[in-house]
Length: 284
Ligand SMILES: Cc1cc2nc3c(=O)[nH]c(=O)nc-3n(C[C@H](O)[C@H](O)[C@H](O)COP(=O)(O)OP(=O)(O)OC[C@H]3O[C@@H](n4cnc5c(N)ncnc54)[C@H](O)[C@@H]3O)c2cc1C
Figure 1 (cartoon, helix red, strand yellow):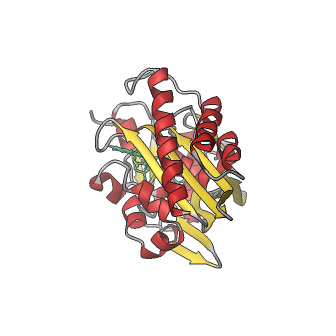
Figure 2 (tube, rainbow, N blue to C red):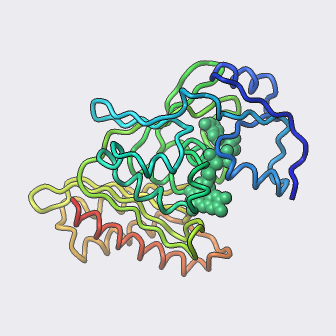
């Protein structure tokens, strides 16, 4: 399908983007990689009269790691994430998750900012950001502000971001210990039926800290404190993993769709979480 007609803008700095967003209000949208927005426009599910391309804003691109803090510019692509040696050292879960997104063509274009800001519960980066306890940096007409990823998602496609704000970057403390991103999907290139992001630290043979987030199992990503709490202080044995899965199942709320009925999704969620915890522990 062909999208409805729209005006196209290509500003070269953030101030230019904010000015256009202020001028055109909710008739304007920014476009990053376009791999979520353009399909929505073609299906006439998104009505955008003024399209503001972020491609020429160089300050939105790049990965920096300073004093143990990782910062990723919003226009950094999933391909860049996979190919960053520094990120592979500082936060290897990012690459492990990014390589499971779609296919190489999508990953060349799809950005971290677009994936995080989109608010689609099927996107992989939001759960990942919650697992890493990331901060999301926004700029709008009233200046800059930061929102915790764990507080950002309100319901499907509905986030804390105001219409006239741009997500400029995400940042998080470089995680310690073991990690795993486990995703079950129907075929290569598909969104998750269920996915789990896990970070675990180990002390004296026991779990010292844990963080667990699930993807596409509710209308927002699910950061499950109950699942993580069930692991802390345990030797991460079978009983502890079972308790963590039970905690996670209390927190998710999947709905039936073409990826399966609720019972199947709960089963898939249990399997991916069990595998992710076991792999993260083996790396802790
Ligand atoms: C075939 C296919 C398979 C896919 N599979 C997966 C998958 O398995 N997992 C997954 O996570 N994703 C998947 N995707 C989606 C892909 O990762 C998208 O690229 C991503 O979700 C959105 O990033 P984008 O840069 O393309 O954003 P765009 O499509 O350009 O934008 C998406 C939305 O975010 C807004 N936005 C973009 N950037 C900003 C910003 N900096 N500040 C504020 N708002 C912004 C836009 O206005 C728009 O509403 C798939 C896409 C396709 C086409």
